[in-house]
Image (cartoon, rainbow, N blue to C red; front, side, top):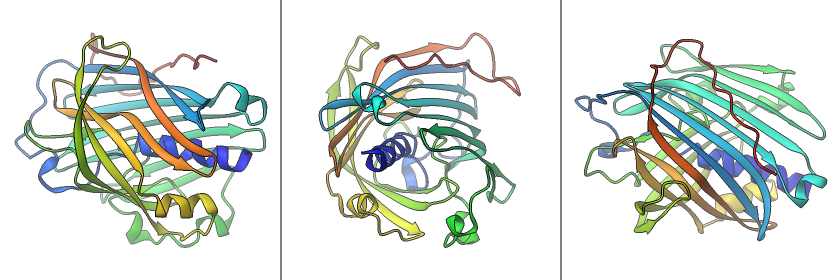
Length: 291
């Protein structure tokens, strides 16, 4: 339970925040501008595993011109928390640089009943991430991911943003993700359009459902959960437009795990015009998830 529970939480959060990247015309063009004041987007989300509440969390995004700042918090909840306590705090900032999103800094601060670790990725001008981990990883933990495989990747939080042209399809793209230890691609393909009403928005929105295929790049792990992700053909993410339709973000994710179906869904979503511009060094304080 502990092993699969941890991997389910990590995978769900990675998919939640890993849905952008390279992908042809669907991404912003060099002439695409993001005028007007900054937008603040906030939401809570839940993860159900095998029909039972497994985790809750919060997500916040500040979009200001070509700049973004993101924060996410995830912790186990409900009955599973009695057996496996864990919390993941993640933050990322960067810029929209057509035709892709380019992170500058990424931080993951996590703990569970057995361990704790803080991971930071700092990206240089060549888009190469530089890793700092406290406590440090063992040498064998980082084996197999070559430098050229890391360059130009998305961290698992900045990838939550999907800038699009007005008539573009946010699906049909391949997403390169590197989380500090693992390098994998998420290959999205268009499935259908649906109408849904996330709690808090009050009005229906048109979401685009994308099929997902998980492709491990390095290291090639033979764990049961990783193999299931690789072979899984039933993963679907629903993307909805925000920021006046300039950005798509995930509002629902569904996949199979060794413990049953997992569903991640945003709740209590809100979007408002920000009163203040993004300032360097700003840190958003997120409320703790509801039990």
